Length: 80
Image 1 (tube, rainbow, N blue to C red):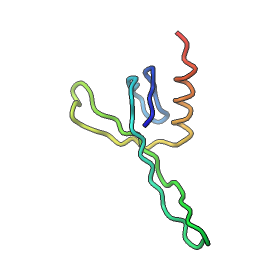
Image 2 (cartoon, rainbow, N blue to C red):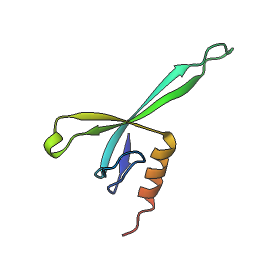
Image 3 (cartoon, rainbow, N blue to C red):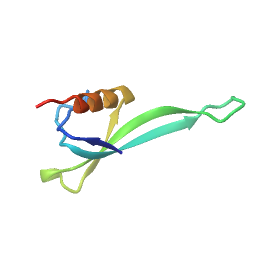
């Protein structure tokens, strides 16, 4: 879970999302051939619940970890 205190935008998406809590889903795969168990991230998604006319719908938005960190850093440094 991540929480945004202010409306925010993510790279690759035109719309602005409202402040609030968002679930982050990370897909990983086992790296084969190692002498220990290790995983690599294959995809990161932000779970976006619909609002207004799209209420009741949920969207998985493919994002990068870097884009998520950038948005969170922007949010924490937001000044009014």
